[in-house]
Image (cartoon, rainbow, N blue to C red; front, top):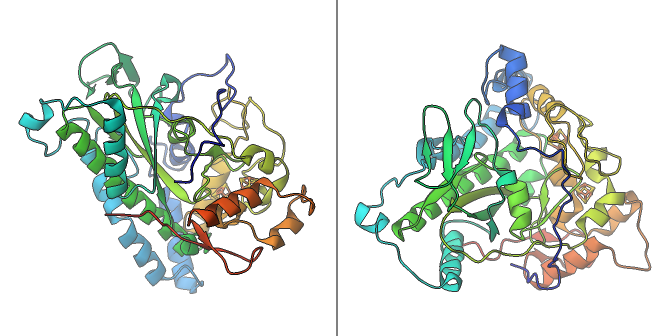
Length: 405
Ligand code: SF4
Ligand code: SF4
């Protein structure tokens, strides 16, 4: 990772007011659009319309939407669907109890200094496919209030478990290990055609592998682990707390190493790990006048205005000062497109680093001074995350630390 010493901040990385409440999953656009389409509660029911339009585009022979393009996407998504299907708490391989770890390991806690345990966890996460790993204290505000039907309850003691009426998380589970998996930058550039979606599918498969494997590693050391993909808690604020990056105008995390071209997963644990520190490397200041994601969003789902706390639609959770996204507009474009979209990741200059041509589109460009993006690009080149022959031309993204899976 790029050293964070000069980026670390001592204040809270976001402003949260008294109106904030924990977010229920049933307010997510995946659920609300699924309900509008079918009258039933579910995450995936929105896919019906998307598949109809996918079939139409295959029949029309549209470039980037062929059967072969979709086949490549489906192959990339296999491990995601097998391991955790984007994240349903305590289901499939995301179970909250050991999968294969023998009891003699699960019941024997390896006691080591926090520094050593933290180092071991970060090394294991890298081996299982995480390209970035950070540790956060588990802030209960970021735990979902409800899944589709049941609440998540934070309780005093016991083991993590799912009862008939609730998901119970004991308060000793007070750390989140947040992992980012870098996506393929060339495939993402093809958004909104199907190869862009393939980058996301592969990212989901890789994050499933990382979350499930790391949880088993932690259990085999005698600690509790809850593996999560998109489920159980909000990944982005946990990643901000874990010092992995900052929130951008497009509602996604921007990391110093890969911009937003990542997927996030996490493991919640009672292992006494050392938390990392939130960072500021100028993202919010840059987003103030960049607007590229908003201008290139086909559904006008991204705000062109300043940060607010009220939210812009029923899918939002008000009370945090930020740029809110209209989730339903975004998802309805996916349906019409016959494939998911990642234009906001593809056009974000933090995805591929500084190119001088982007200056014409950024309202703050001042040739006399380096902007936050240029400073970040220098750092990415220095630490091996970007390669470029001529400064100002488009650099090439590299993933220097990837090991294992
Ligand atoms: S994924 Fe596409 S439609 Fe959705 S916010 Fe990003 S650019 Fe807009
Ligand atoms: S495209 Fe520009 S405004 Fe949008 S998130 Fe990236 S830097 Fe911020």
